[in-house]
Structure formats: C-alpha cells, structure tokens
Image 1 (tube, helix red, strand yellow):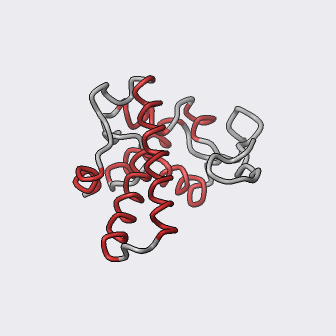
Image 2 (cartoon, rainbow, N blue to C red):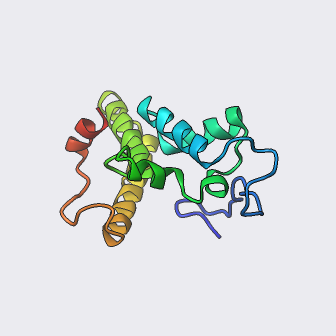
Image 3 (spheres, rainbow, N blue to C red):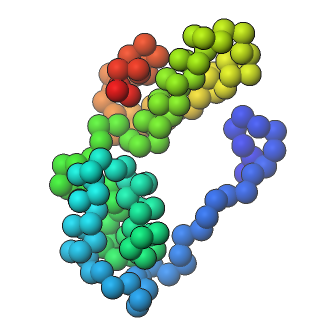
Length: 151
C-alpha cells in the first residue's frame, strides 16, 4: 500500500501475536486484567497507554486474548470511555499545537502544509466515524473550537 500524503510505500508497524489465545505464562486472569484497566483509566490514561503499560509492565501481550474484549470495550462498559475516539483526539491536539505555532511563525510554509494535511486527516476520520455512528451527525471539526476540546 502506498501512503496518502507521500509518494512512497511504507512498511507497517508491529505485528500482533499470531495465536488468539492467551499464552500459558500470563499469570493474570480476566477479572484481574479488567481491574487493572479500570484503575489505569481512573488515572486518566488513554486506551493505547493502558495497552502499552500492560504489555511492558505486566507482561500481558494481548488483552483481547485474555479477556475476549478490547480495552476500549471494557472502558465503555464501565462508562470510562472518552467522548471522542483516541485517534481523532490525538490529531486534534496536533492541529491545535501547530496552529499555535503558526500564529507566531506566519511564514513557516512547511508547517502550513503540514497543518493542511492534518486537518484533511481529521475531516476524513470525522466522516468515517459519522458513518459508523461513533460521532453524532451534527459534529464537525472547527479549528477555533478545537482548542477548547483539547483543554
């Protein structure tokens, strides 16, 4: 596959474990994993941060293999999920920081193009999440209101 905004092909990132069952060396059971996820969510961690912490510190390679559910599904069941999807929120934070930079550096044309590309990604994700009914139909990205969303 080729990249959207580049003229080259890219290599994908890390691979998930091939087997769908939990390895025998994982000591935590389903209930212990869910309590760990909920504790980390109460601390304000995002789903990707929780997955990384459980992989690196607890030695759990795949939460779905242990619990049968994703981290976001567990957070939604316990009403701890974020209002916006994490990938969309990260792009909005990046766009807000870049707009702040552009206020001070008006002639920075490279970052001006980068901001346009980021906002194009945001609008594509917005359209996708509206079709999947994750976002309401009347939600749309506004750069002025995005700064308030991030805070």
